Image: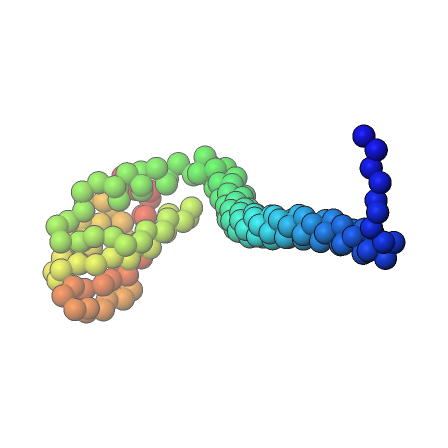
Length: 177
């Protein structure tokens, strides 16, 4: 079929221009839609990356704290190991500490409890503790002197709210029995 366009030339150009404008408007609309979808997609990806970055920073901070605590524990372990390395030869050399430890782990007089016990290699003992009354401290001193053969000196007493705090130093006369 043969087509012949009998419209005047300016009218034909106007129709071509109208067709071009329609195509351009549709193309711009499609392009705007694609760009809007791209914008929102990038915005969501940015938000997800920001959340992931915040989570990773939080995790890194937690790892940093755990690592810091681990390093503190390693230093504490090394300090304890040095103390143990120093103490083991001393404990092996001194046979007098074992009976002393047995003495203070045995049954103390009633109403007396120890807070601190220091044992030196020269058979010196330093005791800190509490008692219900002064008579209980006297019973402890008697127990240490008469039953266990120690020379005892009462260094300090303090009356607290309902008890008496004391500090005693003691030494052996020829070793602990």
